[in-house]
Amino acid sequence: MKRLGAIAIAITMIAGVVLSTPANAAAKQTLTVWATGGDADAAVMKAAGKAFEDANPGVTVKVEAISWGDGYAKVLAAAAAKKGPDVFTGGLSWGISAGNKGALADLRKLGVASFVQPKVPSQIYKALVGYKSTKVYAVPFDLTLMMMFYDKTTLANAGITAAPKTIDQFNAAAEKLEAAGVATPVYNEWGNADWLGFFSWLYSSGGSLYDAKCKVTINNAKGVAALNQYKKLYTDYGAPKPGVADWSMNDNIKEGKYGIGFSGNFQASSYYTYNKDYKNWSVAPVPAAPGSKSVAFIGGRGISVMGYAKPAQQQLAAKFIKTLFDRSVVRQMNLVGAAQNAIFLSPVISNADTIDAYPADVLKTIKSQLRNAQGPPNCNGWEDSQAGVTTAIQNFLFGSATAKAALNEAAAVMKSKL
Image (tube, rainbow, N blue to C red; front, side, top):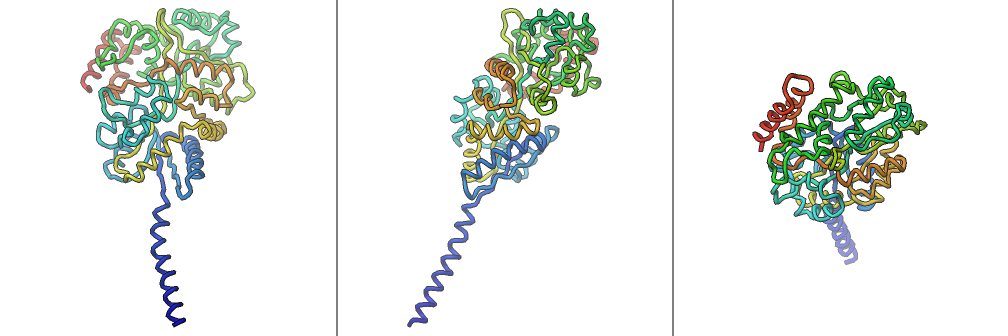
C-alpha cells in the first residue's frame, strides 16, 4: 500500500508539472516593436522596453530598427503577410494611410486614444486622426520641431540685436548678414525646397494646405504670398538648392559661415553631442507675417498597433504605449538619447523638462513653439500628395512657373487624392 501511495503521489507530481508548463509558457509574452529611424532611435525605444520589462515580469520587448526610406512599405507588407511587429513607430501620416487600408488596430477600442488625447496639444493629436474618421490608428510618439538656429556673435557682428520675429525682420536680418560678408546668410536643412520646408512659412503667413473641412487652400492669396517669400531664401539670401546643400549646418553656424539656419530640434541634440564646449548657439521660433502667429511644422513619429496582432498582444501593446507618456520612462529614454544624438521630444509639453541636454533658453523656445505648432494635415490622400506638391513648388523656386501656377498645380494633385 505504501508503494501504491508513493506511485500515486509521483503521478500527481508529474501531472502537475505537465499541466503547469503550458500555463507558465502562456504567461511569457514577447512584444515586437519596429522603431522607424536608426540604431540610436531603436536604443531609445529599448530603454522604454527595459522599463516595461522591469514592471512586467515575463514580458520581453524586442525592438528592431527600420528605415524611413522603406519603413512604410515594410509596414504594409507585414500587414499583408500578417506577420511582423505588434507595434511600430512611423511618420505622423502613416497611421491614417495604413489604417484606411485596414492594416491597423483601432486605438480607441484599446483605451489608448482616450488616455493620450488629454495629454498632448490638440492640434498635434488631430494630425494623426483622419478627417471625419470614427477610428484612431495612431497617437503621437515623439516630435520633431522646425526651429531657427543662429550664432549670437554672427548676428551681433551684422548689427542684428535680436533674433527676428516677423518675416520683415527676417528679411532685414538676412540682408544685413549678406552685407556683413556671411557666406551663406540663410540655410535650409530640414525640408530644403520641399513641401515640409514651405509648410512653416505658409502657416506662419496665415495660410494652410487645407481648411478645417479638408478643402484645398494651398493656392489662395496667402499661399501665393508665402511661396513668394520662400523663394527669396534661394534667390536673394543664398540658401543652397537641394543637391548642393549638405547636412553641415551646425559646424557652419559655429564657424560663422552660415547666418540663420532652419532645421529640426534634432540639431540641438547634435550640438550637445558633438559640440559640448560651443555655447554661443541659440534658437528662435520661425518668423511670422503681421497679424499671424509663428506656426512651426511639427514632424516626428506616431505609434500604432498592427491589426493582425491577437487580442492579448494588442492589449499588451496598449499597455506598453501608455507607459511612453510616463515622465520617469521619458527621462530614461532621454538618458540614452543624449548619449547617442537621439534626444526624445515627448508630445507631452511638460516632459520637455526631462531633456537635461538642452539649455534653458532652447527648452523655453521649444515649449512655446509647441503650443502653436502644426502637424501634417489629416486629410485623406495627403501622404500620397506630398511628392507632387514638392514638384509643383520647385517648378516655381527653380523653374519658370509663377507662384500661382505652381500652387494651382499642387492643389490639383491634392484634390485628385482626396
